Length: 425
Image (cartoon, rainbow, N blue to C red; front, side, top):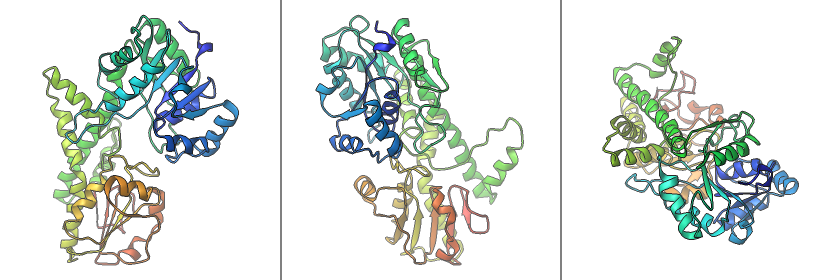
């Protein structure tokens, strides 16, 4: 077994998870980042991360001072001995787990890994994927035997896109290994760069399970708040007022209703739902939570239309301003954003929808969703506006100038002054 001083790291997948991790590891260990997207690699080597997860000065320092480099060449990673896989784990159009990125990354590892080396997976999966799906691929491609010629670990990612407080170096990470010795090595490697340390799980499957329930729990909790919002809206009661009152009790967990998008909370539960059914368990709470949360975009759009009708605002061909299309505030991430559902529902009534988002890359939105986004707000009036994302820029807008009475302002996030809005989720 290698010593920690001998570790040479390759991080496979340089997205929202892999790049911050690779940059951090480069401060303590020789580190190479690998990605099949050569344009992404070129941009990173020029010192810019368009996900905005790693600031340009930190990336440039890693390259110039710590020798960090990114590559799309397999030959450049064959000298490493610790391979960390941080690729996406999406679902298909039927919400079934799509392991293709993991299989592809495992094939890359298999072509590069040598005797005594270790591969650590960070991608979110259901329990068993690492040992039952990924490592057999590494064995097949490399010709090496797992836990004899090479070893494995699992340390689930906890990156929160756009969060500048809970950064990769300050979060506490779960670690695990395929043998006690490997578990100790992997744990020591992460502890070398983390401020708040680690939790060493007793097995890879426990570590996998711990990650997937983190996001599933949050999905279920938000679904409950969304269900309450529907109930209280039907009763004419402000949900946020109810939450404020209830949170005066010491053990009430204060959450808010909202849109559940992104690559984690709105996707990961499907992995556990699928695996549970293999074992004859139907996870009703998780499944119902997913259905409820997936329907909130259409619900917001229909509630806005209802408010327009109540105020006598003509819905057909109305001019509507949609504020934000990223899946969360103050970050450019548009993966699985549920704001698209608001847009598509409103398109049944009017083609005159302006989507304003100063954070989203218009070309990416156009490519992924076929929706045009403006980064500068046109100086015109609208019949309705929906604040869908809580970007800081939106809180400074004079919405009543943009949407004069009797126009409707709908606040999904509950952040606008009470006198400005007609309704909120």
